[in-house]
Image (cartoon, rainbow over all chains, first blue to last red; front, side, top):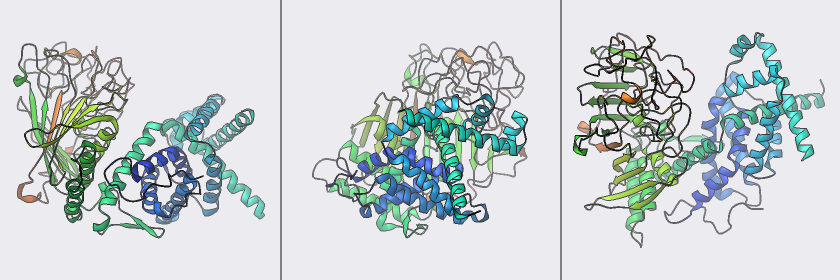
Length: 188
Length: 442
């Protein structure tokens, strides 16, 4: 189903009344968190905001080409994916994501296209609950890594473990959160 | 490993990253932040639309399309032609409109016009609350200039009524400030700027007036309020959670749609509320009565080095500004000068001159908490002519080789409470906390 009013002129703003940019902004907001999640899964945090901005700008320019029968979020994500590839090529050897993983992230993100922004937010609340239910040692590393943005080495020093152990603990914590989320999804 | 195994690994990695991304989004990407990101992108896309026909070198090509680079990264020389066209486009939109231009359309045109770049000078005037029995005309003031070429070339000169001066700059390579003895000190190029010239998003206000205008469009009720033939927009806060001034008065050049003057009114305590205040250059721990802090009315940030004593609670901004960290002050220079002194011990009374002491001892600077002058109730930013049309190449560079590094900011401490990172804008009575160390630029 199209998310853009069929009678909307997809041209530059005339300066009067709701215009294409206004409607476009509403759509981008609707999909903003999901787009950010895709980017956070695909590129380093330091690049997320920039690529988000670029995605919006490119999407705006290509809006006349947008097939209104297709989901807007998936279309934006496709643009974002190209920008991630572009970003990755600039990073050279430090490329954070290979093609197969990126495609898998795209598929994972597609699963989130169902529902609206509020539903996505509700899912994040469930996620927070799942994090809160983690055993202390796992919750601590999640807190240090994601809330305080502490580097792995610092977390390792904080919790008295080596770097590899912390990485593994983070991975297990995320897996536990994923399992918890799935069980919550199953019960709702 | 067969193909299926490989695929499974990729899916597993993707799922792992996805959960991590969701945690990150849940923790950091609040709806408010997402809205801000979108607002800023929309400002840029509107600008990009307006400048479509005058796209300059510097576009980047991405997957068969191109997009104008973000405004902050524009080459400052390039948008000169764009600015002229913007003015024509924006002006035409108004001139040929069948109805008188609305406040909305003017604001939009101004947004487009202000998205350009180039050498700019803004005169700054900070008006502080009067003391008991003082007339408005006697309100303490500080004046100065803010010179901007782009995000990397900025110079700020402020003169306070008591004769103190603040000079700071960055040329993209070297950040610098001048201490009270006239020594040039180096500092990080990305050191925070005084709060009164920042937007809530942390950009330089005058560098990104388009962002401020987008905020006005989103969070203020606006009407045209032309005075004396000047095109003006009066904006009143809509009561939302946006942390900003109570009201804003914009004067706009009818031809270029550039904002020539912005008066930001933060309301402020009743006349005389600033009794025992010291001087215009001092700040601002108020009673946490809910006033916004400085121009952005934000709560304090951890990176502010000049952390004042703060209070048990940060003063809520006008529109529900951040809570616990303590508010921000008006002229509080973030940077090397800050920091509550390690000596601790707030001077019980301000010294005879009220000067922030090199000695750093209790006394001269002691006026924390209720003794401090509240933040400016009005901040006026006025565009003025750039001498000779452009700043000299060395204008943004340090006047001489830095003799040493400016003192680093102290590590952040916990929010609120004695010694909390409330900065010069610290709110609350500030029951304790020591004087700051010598301020590098005062």
